Length: 270
Ligand code: NAP
Image (tube, rainbow, N blue to C red; front, top):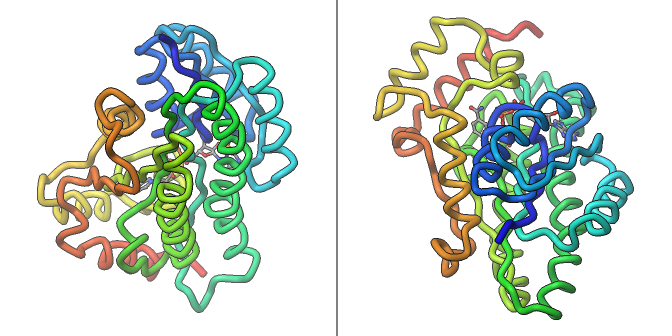
């Protein structure tokens, strides 16, 4: 039966790849983001990929009232979500000593606060639905290897992703009794609108990053989406909760991300 799925930041990059993956299963797929035209373009692709229904929400996850409105509208349309993919994020490189309080807040508010607001608003509806139907539901969050290591050059994102990982594990324990599994996926570097604009400054650096990955290639958004789909699937991953799955070609094992983020931060203009 078609599941109901929301992908935050589903108009681009990994979020869109995951939305397309759910669409190919015939699910009802909602996406949100701040740019209406981006969402509209993505929604056409998602419908064409086979989604049973598509909904778009111009919603800024930094604002809990925006998220609450989206949750109410989606609940009215489809009932409780079966799957929440909390993917929306923003990032830019900046050495810690140059980062302003506003720069810090910009990332923390999207990544950490936004993830909490979405989990909270949609999680409450999932809890109510579980009390009525006993069904299993799933939350998947997106982190990065610097959530448990260090992120020189991206202290805001590293701090936010560490918070998201703690949030995911905590929800896994607190909400297990409500039939909700919560897992994180930690992608290795992949190219997207966000990385090309804000993270990787030139082709030389992009090549150096590839050389630092044991499997010697970038992952792709579509490949990461397969792991998200696996964790979200009750039949395949129904006993997995509180996990963090690196999909990174072995990158985190080498610790080499520390070097490249640092290099980017040093190269960045003040
Ligand atoms: P991306 O292309 O920049 O996509 C980010 C999405 O989030 C966009 O659709 C953006 O849409 C949305 N978004 C940003 N701020 C928002 C807000 N305040 N409210 C609602 N939506 C918002 O990024 P990506 O590279 O695909 O990254 C996807 C996820 O993977 C992120 O969680 C990222 O941290 C993680 N990740 C990426 C990499 C990588 O190498 N790319 C590595 C590790 C982890 P609008 O701008 O229209 O709002």
